[in-house]
Length: 168
Image (cartoon, rainbow, N blue to C red; front, side, top):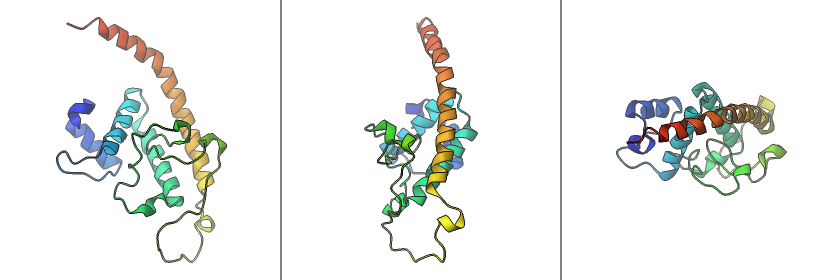
């Protein structure tokens, strides 16, 4: 993984710790897991702060939890869509989860829950959890990240051209 992402093992293990990712042994990481780390590496290369990425990660996991995506039973449920490419306008940035509609429409399919959990005394919304509110916060942060990335792209292109002259 470190070789493919051209990052030191200590950097990758730091990301695993800060993003609270399950650590595997040896080469047992899925393609989706690697795709997630590749996305983080690309965004860091484009000078998106790790603080912004961690905040975005928390928003995405919270949103997916509120929508009960975590009820499928996979230990890496929040990474399982990483690397998929269809319908990019419907996918979250880090988890790459397909929300079923263009995210900018701010419409969600609420109330899906595939687990047999015990009922809570109060609904999540009554306790301050609201998927549409979290989506709004998420979209604000994504918009800011998109602006940061757009500002870096011209410099990155010029740097890549310049680096081409350094080849042996």
